Length: 186
Image (cartoon, rainbow, N blue to C red; front, side, top):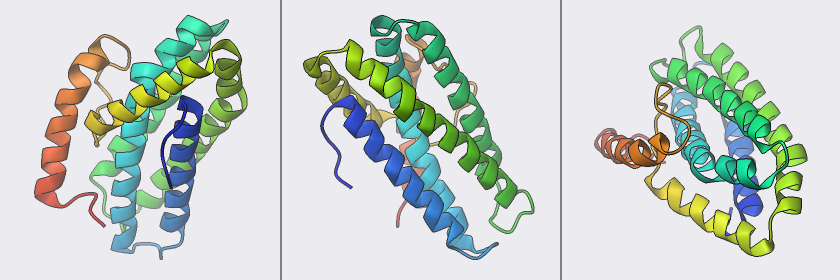
């Protein structure tokens, strides 16, 4: 899928890619090692997406949307739950008895979060911001995803300035580990 455009188009494209990864995971036989590889790919995408939202989307929601603090806090809470599920999945093989249960919980949490963003947060942000501001946010999100971590770090800060300071360093370490292990390669 192509990326580009304003923040809403960028993040919606990410959401559809995550949906496709869940479908691929579910399409593999239970216990198949391919499920592990696909969950690694899903983890990379979810972590990069979440970090970029935490760095740029939620601060913009706080600034521009009425009641934005409450909305951003709820979204950050959702991210924390998803990140913990990703961390719990990190060391499990596909044939581990907990693996499929954790994937199902992860899908439930991610799907609820996506529905909330697309039906509530995105329309509020679109109404509160100019098209130029939305385009600029899209550029910031794309840039942030390039340096974001690829592994869950549940204890890392999820709000500025901590996430903007520590995220790129964690991302560099994660990408080096991924390169050495072949994680995330099709």
